[in-house]
Length: 129
Length: 100
Length: 119
Image 1 (cartoon, rainbow over the protein chains, first blue to last red):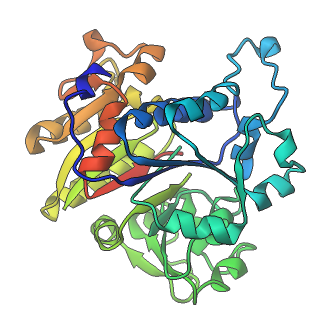
Image 2: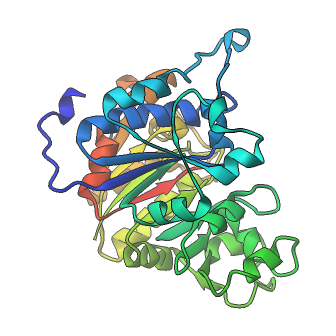
Image 3: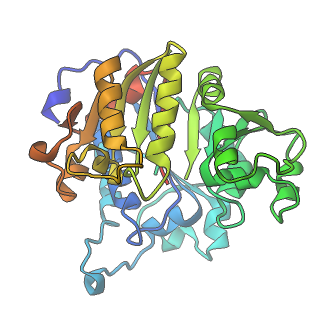
């Protein structure tokens, strides 16, 4: 993003990306991930939340060859290299879908609804799709 | 935080998730198909009425009118606003979260 | 107050772009500033000048363009999302420009509020 190189942010804001949609059925998951990757270059306080069907974005064993779409789940493993380290999952959303931490492609922080509620309430910018 | 919800609670879990994760004291504005969540007498109405003490609920009047619901009874305590009121709500709260 | 707006949907399938437009108009009438509207996902279709709604329908492509020109609102279409959907400079409606996702993050940083409309 060359056009952004000369931009100097005044203060660090808390940016939260909220993912509530499953992958492949719609493009939201993939394009939201692209936003997260770009945001890493801006030195803001970035966190990414997975709720409801958004937790399906990180399940292991995704094989998209039969639908001829790109499997982007491995990209989540690269987020740490972009200094995006705050990946939060809601425990209730996982449990409601019969999933545990072992089913996910990356190590994530699994929070109770109460814990997540406090974090979400403290954000400056919330981007959802 | 101002939460906006644009899905009917009779079709999606969007409003339910919003009410589960919004902090008490937040405002919830129902827009677009979200306005069906403001109606009295639906199977979703009790869940909204039960949270009246936790949240301040608003509904977008132009979306209510567009759907032929101007005369329909709304759940007690829900305030109708226009787009100007929507703007005020955004300005009054530190951030907006869109539940889509 | 300085607002940024994110529009995630195109002008017809979902109400999101209409809602965002009505919100933007009301905010400007109240004396607020809209520093940028960022169009992402199918929202890039709001910038397609080849769009021809029926005569009795609202034309959001034109409405956004006029709002941009009359009030100095920066209308930015995401380049990555636009290329996928065939939105390029030669079919870009007046008032819009194509740029990177960084423009969305910048809007979040610079504006007092970022307001999101999608589906």
